[in-house]
Length: 495
Image (cartoon, rainbow, N blue to C red; front, side, top):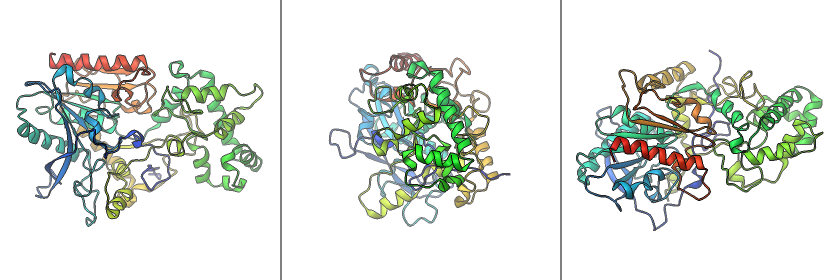
């Protein structure tokens, strides 16, 4: 089997793999206005029979709780680490928060066993563990939720209540799978922007990025998409000859301190043009942003407003050479880096920062390697980022390419992939919500499988935009999506 491009963007990686959520919108845990973390005891390994336990953090909002009301559970995951804002006002599950008063629900949010990892005393591993990632899996995370259900039912006198899971991105996957694997515990699920189909080569990601730039609903156009694609195709041709490489160095300011020979190296070509020569938001598209080329509409405005005689490459250079927004926001194009849990000790901070949680799960469960293969709809320079271009990423975990393929197949078999309605899963009462601008929707469930597995596509919406706090600037489609989710869940709960 040819070498696999198993590249991710961990805290210590420079590759082009995107994670599913960004930590930039996280509210600091130090805020005194939000609930403090509470803790429950759970097993480090739910499946081996070992007795070791640890303290997992959770948050609660009972401000509007009424006897007999439902239980809303916000699932933690790889996005911004949970803090007290998660049950009051945050990007995670605010569609649930804003429904509390109407429903009389009590709301919990459970930190993920790794991505949350409140501090080193509330984490399943320690600096002394020789294999600290061995307890990181979606199956362990789901078992944590089941353990929390048992704890909270007793501690908060919730016997007989209907639990609804909420989550976006990887937590959206977990939210749906909690209902799927523990149907007697979790009554229904709102699964937002959740790629529940594991796949090695996720060509869908960049195909959808390109399609987003032709959507008028977010300021895109067919001409904008075509200019970006043509410019990157021409750049691919220029990279193959000395005169072309020299011209690129003179055109792009980011190359000003390099020589044309630098662009002879395939890895450098990939870094320059394999995932775009500038920032091309889609997953994180914000229609309300005001910075230079900070969203699809503003990128397209730059691309289409150049002099009529400007070539597609020159238009891309104008885009790339323009004034930058914050360096941390746009580093690595659209790549988002995971934020480690807050901890005050140098030892703990170092351990958190060195461990590549998401990279490990791509090797052991999901794949999700976004590529720009020749012949796809990807509008970057095709053939630079491929499955063969970063061979051996997962070798550090002792995993070969066949191992990774087998892990992905096992994940799809365990959770049902795109057909969780079929035996032995027989899923029900899961709502799959996606945005058509979000590239992750390519591996989600987009058509209703049964009346009890409905779907919703939110026009013009990026990655689980409807789980964010409501704002006057929200797209009408996002506002409508929140109402549709409430209507569906309400029907299930008979509210």
